[in-house]
Image (cartoon, rainbow over all chains, first blue to last red; front, top):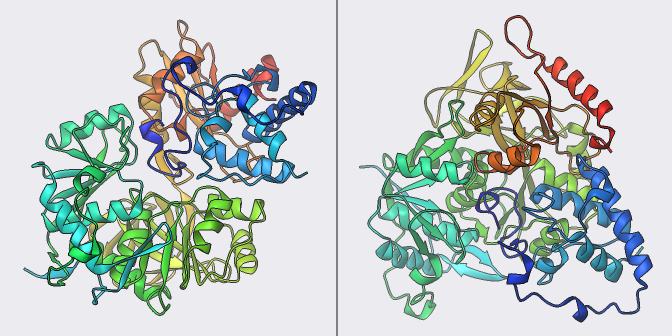
Length: 128
Length: 458
């Protein structure tokens, strides 16, 4: 996690430690291990686009939804979101999908790894 | 010397903190303080970076009993850390993050306390340390407008006087077994006073956790058995309501860092059935007034604090405020002890509790090689935020740079909450004949740029 975010209103450090370099340097949980083989790929892509649009609108991001790189980290470098944005996203997915994000979720590093990972998490957890 | 106790807790078994659902006794806490104090390196200045509030409190206690001074900067960018090293060359960092990236000599909390933490060993006689009221306890920094962080010295006596006034004003010490949970960090002046010093001096327990998401706040409160006090901000309170989060019974809610609209205050009080008090203060003065915004518009000053207004500028003096101190807000005194708050002076910005000035931010933007002219300004069109946070925008003249590289350079210099959204590159700024930049002209130019680049405002 960038040190300057540890001061105020940032999420606990373990939750959002962004990778310090390219992903391949990290022994991340492999995508194949994710328990969603039954979700059709086409729905995931639609959900990914829907979430991108919600984020761009909700955060007033100076870009269009389809300009978000689905594989770039959401937090820190990459999309450049900070902890307040992450809180906004938590409220958006609470409202839209009935999901309550938790800072002590061991999976946060994976969930916020990219838009694609985030969409997959929403698909797994949504209750509406 | 006139000594003031580190904590108000008078029995060894009194609970000073809750951590991961477990109580921590005063005896154990004072043991940890003594152990850590004996293991601190030689430097007299401590940047206490512990995210766990209990560990922060042990670090602060150890610094106080060994007459070391805590350094509390407003942000931790590489540039600010360099400036702090120049300010106090012997500064070291106490951290509970093994991967802490601050470029300072580091002491890892777990290493220093590795051999302790066992209640059975608490054989020392229970004695609460008395700290000299005149001892320099902390330097708290504001960003300053010239580019260097500005130190504000805090003596132990003034800090204690301030939070004792807070204790007298708020119904904290009457609460049986009160535990104070904060969504703000201990390193921020409000969190420092209300989530660490307030429990210390009121006999309440602090909570090690700093919950972030609404569901985290609910879970952390559930884990507390006694009277629950929530120390928070408009951002988090708004988030709790927006997520429709159910909370266990609360005895008291506190808010600071930004003005709380009366309707939001009433909504919070009726949803969570607890009085909501708002605290007014600044890094320079510490906390100095409170009000209950659901019921009243006027603020009541801490005992002894007086306001003076001259040429439209307000300053505070008296009580725990040692010398006349200019305030960055527009205050209208009603009588000796009450005032109305009319917002910030024009140059100041406050985003989610982080304070800066447009002058400072502009200075940092101009200092980037290749930037010819530039100006930050406050947007007035960001109404979509669920947490109610308004961001800044910036117009920049830099023919040889692109927006991404300017943002990367800026990230090294200013706190990320102030990064402009958007940062627009323009050919020139709409300066008037005197070289000034009217805010409305900046907004007009932004709107114009948005027309040319429609994708910038989706």
